Length: 151
Image (tube, rainbow, N blue to C red; front, side, top):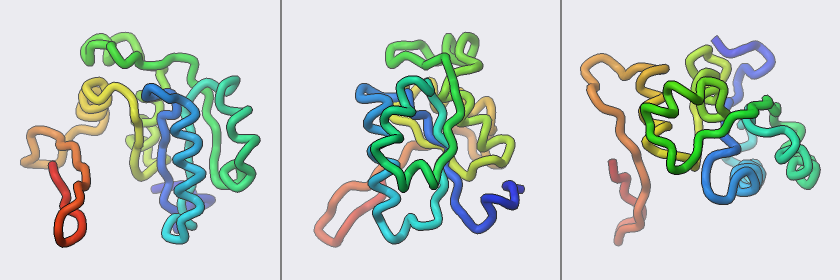
């Protein structure tokens, strides 16, 4: 169960250090999400290097009130081999965000970082549902009738 403080809210664990534009892109995206009325009940657990994230958060007061920052010194590199990330990045922002889902402190994890490492770490930490043998990545593409989900 998620803590009573977060009851009724969707809690997203954000790996703020993942991706080419990290942590700027993750912080700006979280702030943009809060501007959407459908995301008014979203709370963010932001994982990453405090010294890089705090100055960014100061630009977005609404995000400060709808988030918690958890320091992670370690970062999974974009070129890191997934098996190496599993062994050597146990205290990374990515692994800590995944662990938040496992411990039920968050409903989902979001990362723009190393996709192979994210999939491998998530599969080992969270496991798959019964009869599901491989995880999938979903994206939405435009179509003539709106958007279509592609796995």
